[in-house]
Length: 586
Picture 1 (cartoon, one colour):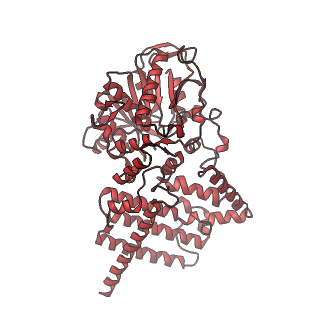
Picture 2 (cartoon, rainbow, N blue to C red):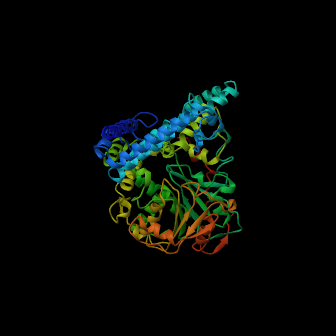
Picture 3 (tube, one colour):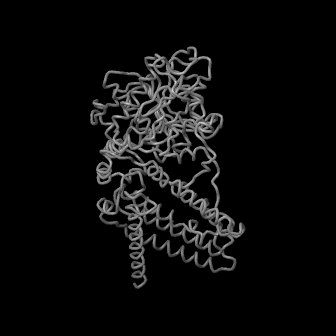
């Protein structure tokens, strides 16, 4: 009887400790570092503790499951303690890469602290899974616990990090001095270094595909690339990258450049290079980006080439912008696109994955009040948000390496691009937040009005190639597949391995990963349709680029002599690619 009472008391104490710690983590989302002053990870809408409490007035648990978690914890912590006091320490070596170095195994104190941490982390995640409530509340709790545990790992502290201590001793303190220098450098530049940024220069060793700027306005520069073939397809090809990043993710190096690949396949290729907004653009909205950027780019490509229709591609947010622009043009009775390719893009925002936890009425209204009429969302805030979606890989890994071990991260073009952030106009961002992530209006015919036209994706009746990445945490594969349910034209859906960026930037020459195809597109209730599609899909080794290239050639028309000069009489060369817009820092 007393034993049961003690167990019940222990379970109650565990629950109270967990809730108190969770509330501390949620309070951090309300303004404390490392999160933004507005709340939650910077860049996404604030969700302070009061908003969290409104969404979930109380955290409760299934009593039986809580008792089981408590019992398992007591058994494991007892076993861990017994292992720690045995001669030579019988604690197994940690498989977690943060604690896998030999120094952790050789230091009994560090080894025990790592084992204790991992046990506590498993238990806290079990408690998070045991929380009762709706899916969004449970996801928010899981995210809070993950951030809490990532930040509190013993590897993040010099006093507990055996590997960093060993390096300090072996280097006679040099690693600590270098770590301080790295910290001061990163404080000055305003973000944690993920790579040696001094190695890279835009136009010199990234974004090097030869071309010229043939048009510019206050929103974008239009780049045209030099043909690599004697003949090109008669229908030109326009790429619309995301405006939340620089375009050169599509042109990092010659051997992994999607832009260069398209040019080498015989396409007369144009790319939108977005301007990095400053205060002069603080009042620009979604309509401005559709009318004066996406639609304008389409018109200029038509004017330069004389083509009645062109092939188009949108990547990530660029896909959302492109599809919206095509819907606006369709409402005006225009059909300038012969085809569209959507790479890891949302049209249907039903399944936004982890990003959904940041969105509710309170947070959206806050952003509208804060910057809906003017202002800038700082690029570094947005970059920090996406980094904290994978805190161990994209935050604490570099904190430990740069500052505790005094290491300089190796040069890596993709991470250089990832750190080259861009601002967003406040009104643009506020409109996007409400009409996509929160209300999902783009897939509701006539619900939203853009550039004076009611948006109806059902009128964008053109062939579409839709690509999604299997492990994408920004645009989950189900969210990518959902686009096939709203576009009426002939569609092809392809799934690639890996994530949001690595899955897309996968050149054939590397012979890496694989992709899946299936000509049948189930239209079951979301999100079961994509799962049904996958059941009968065929896997192919290598890059999806070859499949896409074959598809695009079928919509590119006949081949004609390649142009000998950039632009046209009306649209003359302004400067060499990649242009000055992409070089502007946030």
